[in-house]
Image 1 (cartoon, rainbow, N blue to C red):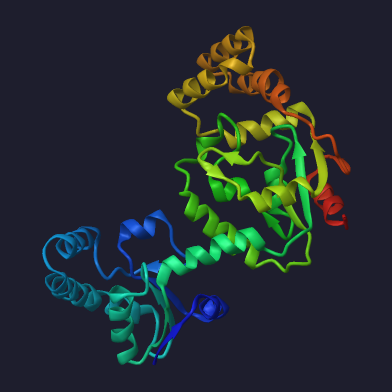
Image 2: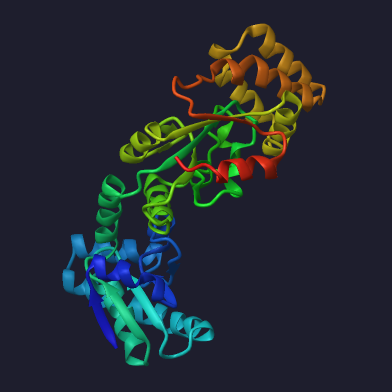
Length: 332
């Protein structure tokens, strides 16, 4: 069975798919894809480029024949891999860039051997339009926004609060000059896809816990509608003892190496006293990371942190379970 669905119908059925296939090239998939999709490509990166070049510069028919031959070879391998995990009759969603030859070819093969296949009309392009529209109009209005100085445990709290959105986790960035320690960030498209998926799974009437962030997190920009709703949200200021914050910083930044440290220190030079910067570098070179953390918290992070004018509640986070209980009891 092969059914073509528009984006609204496809998204409505997405949770029922036993497998969601992205039939685009690995490069396209790695840049961004529908969350939870697996890449069973119709054309590899090199094949996709070769067929595209032939299509533009030589002959459309020659390109179609070459593409079909590659798709048949790749499909032969993919079908065996899919069958190892998903029995005949399973529900499979599939898409390519624009709902054309790549997804249609794999969909036809899979449906002909007994899979229930649902192909996305207009492909990933229609999904991206759906995401952008959703992030402008999503219905959620109640946000409990956690603020507070660096190291007071906001991210740890979010892990224990439901429903919650961890923007730093989605963006792979901790929102500071040292924030890129989490590694390479996703593309903006991948971030938006993951954010939309997270919001879609939360009932619109529920209050969502989220950390207060600036609009830009490294290379990622928070969508305007969400950022505006966060600014209007119920603001909770989290505090914690300095020693506890130092422990949190040491845990968060344990992977910092020398090149990363020195580069980050140069980035914050305009915002920290030279004597404090030199003191932190000297402590780092002596291997005294606890002292480094203390200096940076007191002389940099605390001084650049701007406390919001509107604070609706404050909690001193000395005991995680107690703070989680107090936050969960809020009903803004």
